[in-house]
Image (cartoon, rainbow, N blue to C red):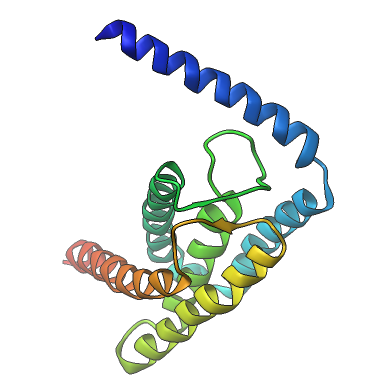
Length: 180
């Protein structure tokens, strides 16, 4: 059994070396790479400028939950061959750093900041999920930054809505208990 694991590990190391070579040749310092870096920085800059500092702990906790969940789900989808990223900020941990660590958490923190509950939260959530799924994803597919294999953007739409409510409920519960 250990011999089989060693063989698999060697294959993983070989693929990683190939991917780093690919990244260095086709991604690093390319216009698309710079676009990802700039969008990453701009997203966080906009967040810092738009939020009320008093609400920062709650918002950052919500953002951290989004980062943890979205980066893990993104990793699973990548590993299962549902999607991929021909251009990435980093060659390690084949994930979309821009989406998992900037766009998704920042946009959902801003949504929660401006529309924390009720019907306004629902409608803002649906609009954000639709924009992410049916506008942003196709744009990044067109730019050849995101590639789908066995996935449909409509799945993303429902997942964004569902996760938004789950993460919001966790944040509300944690901060309600802390206020007590």
